[in-house]
Image (cartoon, rainbow, N blue to C red; front, side, top):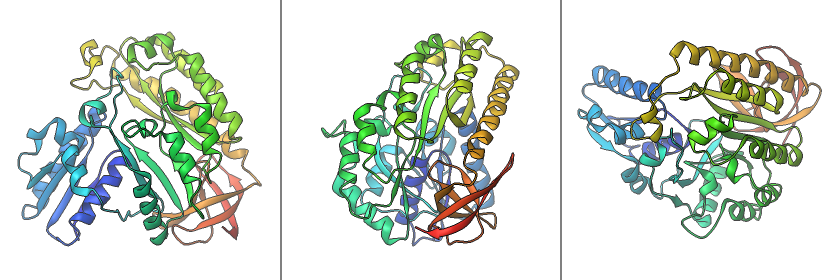
Length: 386
């Protein structure tokens, strides 16, 4: 079977698994699925290709993903380069078989956002939404393969339906009509798409109470230069809507540390916002200039040392908030998706907390009571099947 190396986001992983299915019968194929959302991811993608080329000179290395579209010359020795647009045609109609406990289901591709720092709209510039009938077929496939949790993924899932006259809200209502629907989790969703109608539709689903929001900053001046299209006050209103509608939900965020113009006071605005809002996990990225983006013209004035300092301040803050969130789970029961990592058995709660458990089979849903919380770990015992 073809060997797959997946780098990058959940959408990338879905597409990589589909491409592996396409080449499943060829044992000589190695697929490298690249990412370039940050300079570090881009460097890692190029380095991995060079390593594979040295280690497996007789294999057919197929390179795909965002880096090979941005920098195709870096992969000139590959057996085949498949960029994002061409890949969509190749994998159309193929259902993936992930090596995971959760099923990532691609519902859309493409982004028309004008965020000044982001390279994605230049690399995934065609917006397309998967018809509901196809989504329904893929859900049936996931159930047949034993998955009990489906994660809806895309380049920007809030844009679902823009090309077809539908919407994410309409999709949520259609999903709610499916009998015995597995539990549904959203991947990241932009703040601008968190609206009352969508929240109302999501309440009709067996939805995981987990929302990951790429806020990037909580300073109005920085948000303006980033061209994010909302203010800190509006952001707080979106979070309050989620917190009120889904009590005890796990809220996460993406943050960029050291964006051009982010002085210490502007960073402190973001720090205070994270401290005051009910976030329990963060993805923090040191700013890295991306070619072709508007922000690239601003240079990279914040030093690497200062970026790292801010990153660790936020990491320490969210570590404390995460423990407080998990301590509030003690004694309560949660439905978890069973997964195995490094010979240990865990369950992922609907609120996005990984719980060390005592029994279960991968992909199963189990009811787990939380028995202990430490700085590093949450543990529980299985008290029932779901």
